[in-house]
Length: 377
Image (cartoon, rainbow, N blue to C red; front, side):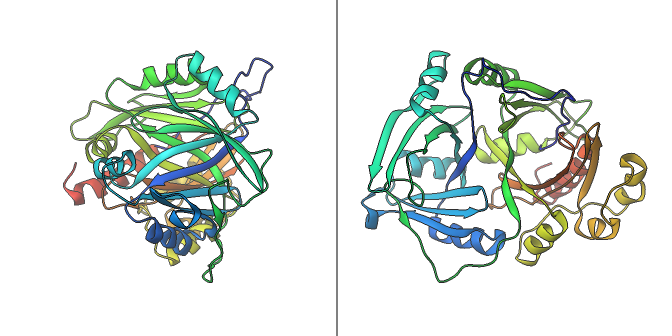
C-alpha cells in the first residue's frame, strides 16, 4: 500500500541520471463514461475543467476530459465504439489507470534511453502541433496494461496539448486542497515485485529507497511485500506491491482478481492541510476506511508530539507516523469503482519522507474488514 518508510539518505540527482524527470504530468484513466467520471471528480474531489478532446475537436475514436487541481492533472477517456484497445481495457479491468505520464525535457531522448535499455515501446516519439505550439510524446509499457508516457511540453502554450480545446464549464466547484501526485502504487503478481524493481532500476534509472517484507506488512490473515522505487531527484516514486502467503486472501490478491491482472492500486495525493482536505472530501461524498478509536489511544506514545489536535484526526480516521526526518498524516479512501480495485490516498508530510510503516497493521485490518464485508477475504 502506500506505505513505505524511506531511507534517511537524500535522493540526489546526478550527472549520470539518463532519464531526468520533472514530475508527474498527468494520470489518464480509461473509464466507461468519461463525462460522468469528470463530474464525479469535479464534485467530490474539487477538480476544475481544463480541456476536452473528442469528435468536436477532430478526435473521432474517444472522448477525453482533462481536469486539474493545482499541479494535479487527470485525463478521463472513454472509447466511442467497442472493439479497440480502450474498450477492451475497460471490459477487462473496469475503470482504471492506463497512463502514468511523466514530464521530461526531451521525450525523444527519454524513449531512446529507455527502449535501448530493454523497455517495450508503446509509442515512438510523435510531435503534435497546433497554433499554440507543439508537444512531443513517447511511451513505454510497464506492469500489466499500464504505460508510461513521456511528455515534452516546453514549447506549448495551450490548455493541455494539441487535439484538445479549452473546456470552460458553468459548474466549477471549489477545490479541496489537493496539490500534486506524491506517489503511485502498483500491484503486481506473485514473485513479480523484484523483476519490476529491476525494470525500474535498469530501464529508468530508479533506485530502491525502501523495502518491506511480509514481516513488516502483515496481519493475522494476510501479507504483502513492497519496494519503493524513486527516480534520481525524488520527484517520482512508484512503490510496487506483490502478494505474500497468508491464511486468507490479501488485499493485493483481491485487487489482482478483480482487476484481472497487474495495475495501479492507488494514487497518493499531497495536501498541506489534511484535516481541511479530508473534511471537504468527506462532505462531498468521498468514503474513507474507518479506523478503530483504540488506534488513537496509543498513537502519540509511538509518534511523539504533533502540531495538530488529535480530536479531528480521530474523528476523520487520519493515521499518523514518524520517521527520522519528521512525521506524516495519511488516510485511504474506499475503492472509487464498483470493483474493489483503485483507491486514493491523501497525505500530508511534515518532514517525513517515508510512507507510514507504523500504520500498516491498523490500515490492513481496516482493509480486511472491508474485504470481509465483500466476501473476498
